[in-house]
Length: 155
Image (tube, rainbow, N blue to C red; front, top):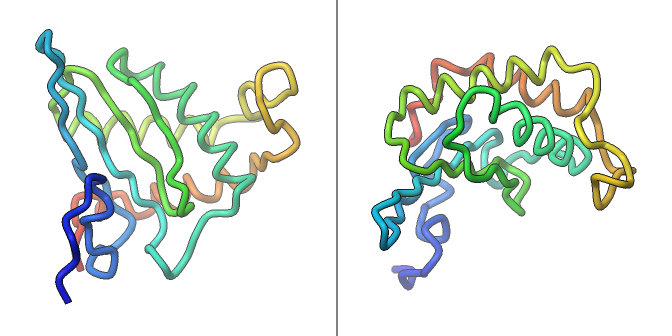
């Protein structure tokens, strides 16, 4: 059965053919003034086989959003996937895939060194009760343990 082409790039990805964890370029958008945004699929869990628990997803989002900006001024956004299997990382005017991997590695190491989740309070977070520092660290540890596989997207 052939699937209809969808507007969202990840909806056109055969999730049964990928092998997590991986980091892949998922999209490129060129702005009318010449800026280029590249979106990366940072897949931490095997789709439809495993997922991250929401408190850990939430804490890892806070930590990666904060810590990644210590390693690059090109970060536009880091956002979790609704399926709870990974994150999207968007960068502006940055086309060096190997450097993206280095930024991610440094950021995940920062997560392992963290003693608290940044902005984990009712003033700075919309659901401050839903966090897990240890859960975020476990995800980061697992992702780093498979660093040599990040460039291998398909099984």
